[in-house]
Length: 318
Picture (cartoon, rainbow, N blue to C red):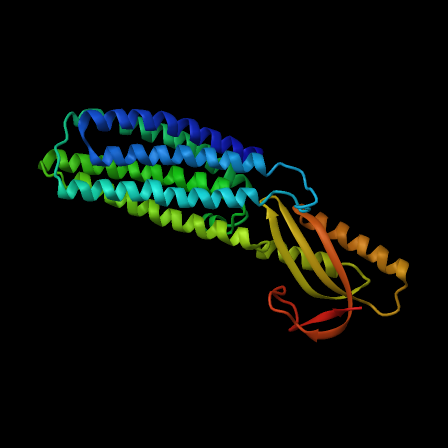
């Protein structure tokens, strides 16, 4: 979690600085694209504060009402950030662009915009580099697959926000430049609309990812496969009838398995086998925290949601 916090703080500091200079430039030059970018940075700053709130709240220890802890606070606040990105950043950017279409404006002192946006690219690249470095250290697959399967929505949000900021700055530069050379404010307003639509798309993606984690997303396929291999490595296990996993925080996985033990085992042997299963699973997948093991013997129709690669039945508790 410490690495995520570092990336969030870096993005927060950068966005506050950029927001102030962009807003000053927008007020001086009258650029819709620059004003949209200033609100984009303002929304990002607020989002980073929300992510930090989520990080802090998630550190509370388990209690009677929340025996599995507060790790999902981070999923909730990341979802709030996605809604905020749409409601504030995307909506305002589109509004400013449409307003520019209806009320054409003139850009003065475009050089100021170029200087500010150039500074923005430099600062955003620093924040993005920090976030991507943390992401690269934890990713297991290719970039896109790792982004889709990422379980830390805070780090995912920072990466997408910083990437969107870089693209948004380039779009703002293009809109201002075309407006300057043609004298037509359409391009500046169009850049603002495109920035807003881009933010809306990113907000939808982040909201969907956070929603999946909130309602109970399983461990990735690779980790599930490792867990199954670990269970089947125990000689006393005849079959793993069902595997259920869920992320209760970005760093912790809850595991529930139904195991059919070999016939003829004594109670002490079953208890020792269960201990061996737990050790084997945690060695294979260190992120696994709580493990619940059900000893099953009688076959019954399998419930939906069982593990990939398991037979089409599950077991009944003995």
